[in-house]
Amino acid sequence: MATASRRVKQFDIDPAVLDAQVSAAVSMFSDAELADALNSSVRDITPGQIVNAIVDSVDERTGMVVMDIGGKSEGSIAVAEFGETLPVKGQTYEVFYDGLDENDTAIISKRRADRLRAWERVSQKYKEGDEIQGVCTRKIKGGLLVDVEGVNVFLPASQVNLRRTHDISDFINEPVRARIIKIDQERMNIVISRRKLLEEERQKQKEFLLSDIQEGQIRKGVVKNIADFGVFVDLGGIDGLLHITDMTWGRINHPSEMLQLDQELEVKVLRVDMERERIALGLKQKQASPWEGIEARYPVASKHVGEVVNIMSYGAFVKLEDGVEGLVHISEMSWTRRVNHPSELVKSGDKVEVVVLEYNKEKQEISLGMKQAETNPWDLVEEHYPLGTVIEGTVRNLTSYGAFVEIEEGIDGLLHVSDMSWTKKITHPSEMVKKGDKLRCVVLSVDTQKKRIALGFKQLANDPWMDHIPNNYHVGDLLTGTVTKITNFGAFVKLEDDLEGLLHISELSDHKIQSPEDVVRPGMKIEVRVIRVDTEDRKIGLSFVHADYEENKPILEAMLRDRDKPKAPAEGAGA
Image 1: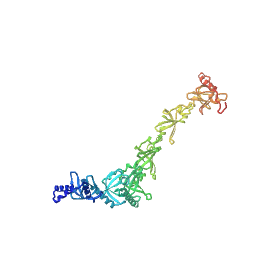
Image 2: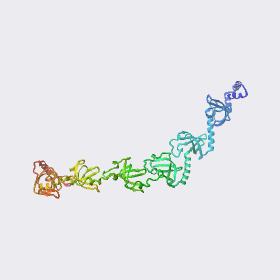
Image 3: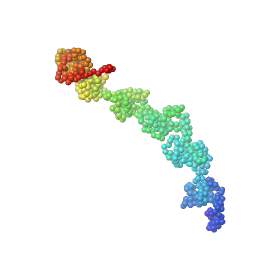
Image 4: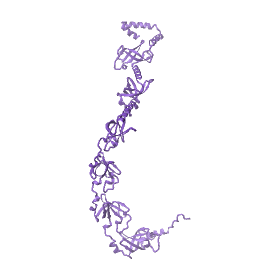
């Protein structure tokens, strides 16, 4: 009725009069008859169809557009569905008809009609495998929506790029080319792959590149991946490996110190493996090797200052210039110090003076020495410490055969046990000295080739075997002494300070005994007779006389108790 009222205006009929007439006519019909009349008015329009609709009115206040779809039926559509252009009364648009609501108003949508028409157009124009172009509109779960001629198609995240993209949001509002991999007509859904298209193009580029690339060429590329051992450079269709050892003539710990992702650079093709489709690249090879003319810059025996760049257990690497490093072996670090590890003398970053010892140009190796840059102190030992020189040193170490005495830093002399005393029988140097003792000694000999100095302690005093002992000890003399130690062949008896005589087991008793301890014990005071004075072998032979001294009573009682103890039965004997 409202539609009729509006249309009569063009015939100059009073709407009020017409409405009254229409109302009177309507009142003549029952509700059922009226419903049938309304249904018959849209009998030729089926829900789910796209129909033509005429703009009847535009209400900018409510933002709604009233549209006539024919058959005395109309519906409303939001102004927003028309885009930026405001519709004008009388214009015709395609809308999607979805039936009537409870107020018998047509449910229509221009946007839905536009989408259906776009889908029809795109689905008819393209098929699976075709290349399409569109613009990424927004990010959704699992990927991106791409507008292709008004239809939103799905670009999965895994299909966005050749390599996994960290943030696919970077593609929003950007144009993309892709390959259609699936069309679902029922669900009106299209899935596309940009990666597939890129792979196809990359394959073509790779085939061209492999047919054109040659060793020795300079090529442009882009860093696509960085690993500990090097970087992969995209040459356009195929990646080449730029190993860390081919990046610089100098030393780097990680490729990221020189290059970064997506960096463009020029590289030299070193090797091409057509079968495995592998390309080795070099960056340092674009420049001359620093090893060219090395002999002229660093001749053997020349002295230079370098920087310690690496320390190993066997030595230290010293950089002479970028790309030229030499090894200072641990044995070439000091003339005098016993170096257990290079870190005792140097650390990374230290500036050190070195001498070139030798080359291996094929292996690009230089042997360097630190000690050769200094004067060898052993060359001056004979001058500084001639024979007979009395020195003062510190006992640095003890061995079973003597004591090492530090004369100056790095210069040790050996004080042998045989040179510690003229008269005392010494079995270990700890009986005379201990580590850290300050000691005066005499230089006995110097061997600069073997780097040895022999020292003597007893030589500080006169040899008592030359005058004192022969003048004071004679065969047949009765002497009193103290047993100091027992051996399997006899006992040593202290006659005076640092002078001992040997009481052989055969001289302890008139009859055969099993052990010297059957007659004497350490600490026992005894009387002996001198039976031999040998100045050449520096020995005094003694014979046992007696041990009848009051102070020996506790020792003698202990000997009797030991003698009276029952002996244990032999192993395996019966009860």
